[in-house]
Length: 249
Image (cartoon, rainbow, N blue to C red; front, side, top):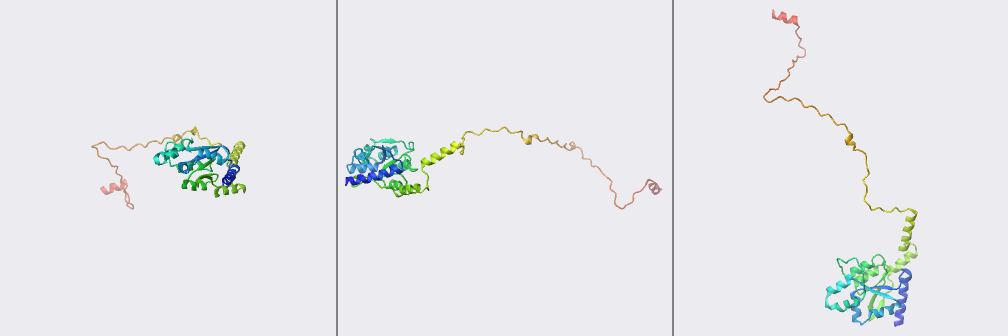
């Protein structure tokens, strides 16, 4: 039975080794649920993991996982002691810790760039791992450590790569470097924009308008003189000088 488990483990490791570039020493992220299950089933993680993987391993965890065990109290004190013996990997939640599940999800997000194996019994984290390509899952069942078979997401990702529908991260990086060498991609400058010297303001070049002289206003106490013009009625004859004399006579 033990030989059969090791054969399955070897086959699953080879899948990740040749398709996702996993290399020794294999990095295994461990959470508190896995340590608690190992403690109950009397499994020595440090001794049995290298034998199961038939190679060198590095057991590691994060600060968020340790802080979560501290908050849960004495019931998980033994799991906390086990985890403190492992290496602590830097996570992006140093100032504001999150739950262990959220923290480990962030560590493997983006197709697992650091090639982590994840050892957990958490159901929420397990579901996330199975949806993410290239993340091997380790769990404990029936007093034994088991490396799960590649998920359907990982198999579908490899099939799409083989069909030429996807581009690997290494291929994308080589494409980007070739574009930069050929000058097809302009580097983005993040410096401050300098103000260009422009010409004079066109509004300042306009000629000033002459102010209209205000009308003379009468001094206080004086009456405003009105200019009277004689109006002649249309059709009425005007009297000449000789005619005026005749009328007077």
